[in-house]
Length: 142
Image 1 (tube, rainbow, N blue to C red):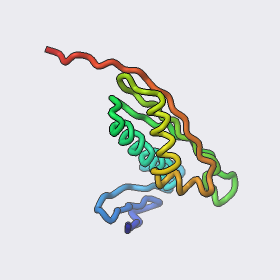
Image 2 (cartoon, rainbow, N blue to C red):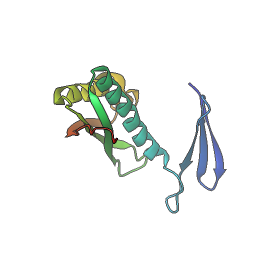
Image 3 (spheres, rainbow, N blue to C red):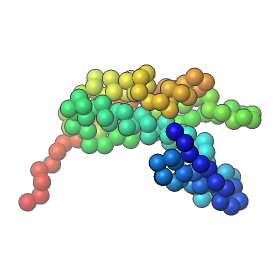
Image 4 (tube, helix red, strand yellow):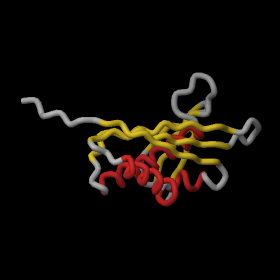
């Protein structure tokens, strides 16, 4: 895997992945125009885990309609201000979702599949929780 990060102006940088996708990073404390690198790490953990959870639930034939992960992190008070704690809370919405299946999907992501959170867990206290939100399918409008 390869990537490049190029200075754009001020404290703004453009990252480009080896697959050609671009993202903007902003290190400005005031008037930032994009996420900071640490915010990107936080969101990457959420995205990685969410992909796992949704994929596992779909493979388990669960009727998933939505999945949102709320992330919270604590950072060290001194430089380097690394993450010390990271919590991921999944709110999974679906029809007749099995709480046991959602719990299993979150656990598999945490223990086996999410490369980002597993990598971080080597130095960060990473925790996970979930809630199941019941939804009902509505008949298509005629």
